[in-house]
Every structure is written in structure tokens, then in C-alpha cells.
Image (cartoon, rainbow, N blue to C red; front, side, top):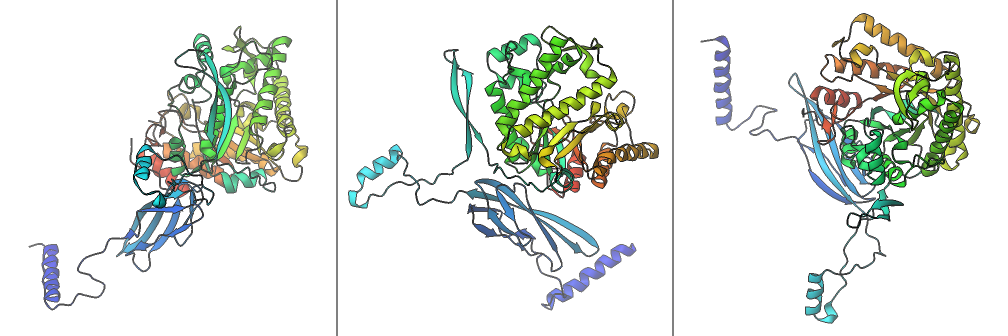
Length: 557
């Protein structure tokens, strides 16, 4: 008989003697009680609390509480949950303890439903048919009004034109946008503090509201006032609140929303008015993020490449300036009362040789052939001019825009080119005491690994890691001068490459050390499954959970 088997038999004989004597050894029990929460579901009203506690936890167990939707409910270190607004939230108790030499971690969850507090002035709604029948059958003296508690959801009402599905005619309708944004502005928070202490990890809602269509299809979508035709043109499903909630579950606290504002404009309109239905849809998606108390970066993206008009004839150049000014004037006016969780970004990657690309008859980019005439020095001058104009337009619009944090597109959003002395940050007289400006750059280095996927499938040599450190150190030029730095895009565009978690962790580590903001580039089918609202790959979900101490779903799709 093997030595291990003799030990097992000896233990069983000893245990049998103890049990027959009616006494259990110290610390043992006839049945181990399961560690669990006192509630798996709870319902409270706004302003009220419920106490959650972990039952049967060992004496030295550590409990860390968290909630996935802080806008709906909060939870204290002692497990007291307080309702903030109507909705549902998941509260998690992360319990850690030792079982012998083994460390055990359990995540216990409670679904909390928050309902609006009943108001003494609640109006009595019209009873249902069945309720009316019951009331008429009862004596009048005992009849009482039917009061149905309602939940008031704060909405913004906007008008827009739509096509009537029955008549095919245009009609003006009212769109209600759910918004819990409170309009708060932290006037004394500078850009570096905002990034390092508030904005956390970021992710892009890529290939969605910046998606565009070919000329013929674009006109058809415009005629039909079909916003979703653009939103889904590059493979994205229609964005939902649940989709954004999923981002939040992995600890993302910033969403960058690229936008193509030209999608539904009238090409013959010299005022470049953004279509109301499109503007309303963008505002709705912005609020999906703000409702989860996330930060939002809103920009003018590639937008079919009309930026190339700047390098062409004087006539085209004038049109480009008019479009840029008109867009930012309209965007600033629409969002000027929103809180400082909303950040405007002047452009995407267009401030460089993209000014000179060939355009078609409508003024959109036709190819990468450079038919424009701007020299590199002139491109820098134009980038500086447009960034300054952006700041001036936003500040002049008033409201919270006077103090809004603004993100300025770097030159080609390239680290080295943006650090060139020809690139100048704009002045911001409204905020001389507290810097509200940041610079945006993108990081896809090495491109053979991060971008095209043809030349390199692995990353992580000592030389590559050192290159990353040196590249990030360049951008300290801006933080040393008091400006924030946001890596508006980074990532690996082929999810099947090796070492991706290592690469992402390396980037986010450099950002944390330097107080930069990392914003992962994600498109439909890359990292996050927008239909199932979860990460496609377990290791990516686990990575962001570890970076943010969150509890997002880590089962692979």
C-alpha cells in the first residue's frame, strides 16, 4: 500500500472515533456553511438604503464592495447601498480569505432595483378597464382612487424630421433623450488631474457614428432620413444603453465617440447645417455614456475626408473653413449645458499631409494622391490655426463651454511630429489659472504588429519595450508644460496576434506612470461583442478587470 493511502485511512479512523464520541475537532463543523450575501435581490427607493452583508465568511476575510452603475446606486465600505436614480445596478462583494495555505476569492452579487420615491402630489392616472369594472361593482363609499406608482425618467425633448412609414411623407416628430447629466463643472480641476484621477481607462466606439457611405447610398440615406444606415454602415449594430453598460462593467470610465457630422447635411447648404435627426442620435449616444457617469470624448473624425479641401484652391479652402467653423458652432451650442464629463476634440488624424489628398466633385477625399499645395510648414501653421479657432468657438458659445476640457489634435497624432516645435498649443484666456487643454496623439507602434497584421504577429522584445518607453517619454514635453496628454487611440487591430494582453498592459502602464489617458481602439468584432455586451476574449476581459478592479464577464464569446 502506498504511503499516501495509509495516511488517508489513518485520518478516516481518527475522524470516526471523534464523531462516535459526539465531539468534533476545534474549527471543524458537521457541514460547511456557504459564504453568501444576505440578499441576492433588493428593491429600494431613491434616497433610501439597504444593508448588505456577507454571511458565513471566515473571521479574517476581507470584503471589498463595488457597484457597476454609480449613477443608479452607491455602496459604502460597509455594504450600505443607497439609491440615487431609478434603474437597476449590480452590487458586488469581493470576498478574500485563506483556506489553509490557499487564497480563496469569491465575488458575490446582488441585483438592486431602485425606484423613484413616491410623491405626495402624484397624479391619479386613468384606471384600466378591469379596475373601472371592479370599482363600479363596489359601494361608492368604499371606492378609493387607483394610484399607480410611476418612475419619472428625466428626458430632453428634441424635434426632428422623419419619413412617415405609411404616407412616405416627411413629418416633424419629438424625440425624447434620456439624460441624467447634472451639468456639474469642476472649475478647479486641471487637465492632468482630470486624466490621472477621474477618466481611468478609455475605449473607442469605433466604426459607428463616424461610418460613411458611398455617394449614391449616402444620398439615399439622407433622403430617407435614415440615421441607422450610417451607424451600421461599417458593421456596427445600433448602439444601446446596454452596450455602454457592458463597457462600464469592465471598468472603462471614458468612451471616445468618433463622429462624421457631414453624413446627413445638404451638400448645397452653404451653412452646413447638421441634420437634426443625426445630431439627436449623437446626443442620445453621448447620454448613454453620461448616464453611467462615464466621460465622453466627442470629435469630428475623418468624415469622408473633406479635410483635403484645405490644400486645394482658394474656393475649396474657404468652404473647408466654413464647414469647420459651422460644425463646431453647432456642436458647442447643442452641448453647452452638459457637465464637464463631456470633452470636445478638435479633429482626428487629419492635421498633416491629409490636407493635400485628392478630392472628388463633392469635396470629399477621392484618393491618397496629393493634389494639394500645402508645404509641411504650412500644414503645421494650418493645424495650429484650426486648433486655436476650435478653442475660440467653443469658449465663445458660453454656458459650461467656458470651462469645458478641450482636446487638441496633434500633428498627424504622431508622437514625434507633435513634439516638433512647429506644433503650438492654442491660448485659452478663459482658463489662464487652471489649464483645461490636452493634446491628442495615437499609438500603433510597431505598425507591423499593431496595424496591418502582415509582417509581425508577436511583440515584447526588450528593444520593443524600450522603444515604447522612449516614445512615451517624448510626450512629457506637454505634461511638463501643464497640458494633459490623451492617447486617443492605441491597440492591435488584429485580435488573433500573440501577446496582445502584454502589449495593452505595457501601454496602460506607461500611461499610468506618465499620467496620460489610454483609449483602446475597438471596432465591431475586434475586442468587444456589442450584441452580447461582453468581451470576445476571456484574457482581455480579465486584463481590464485587473486594471480597474472590476467584475466584467470573462467567459469568451
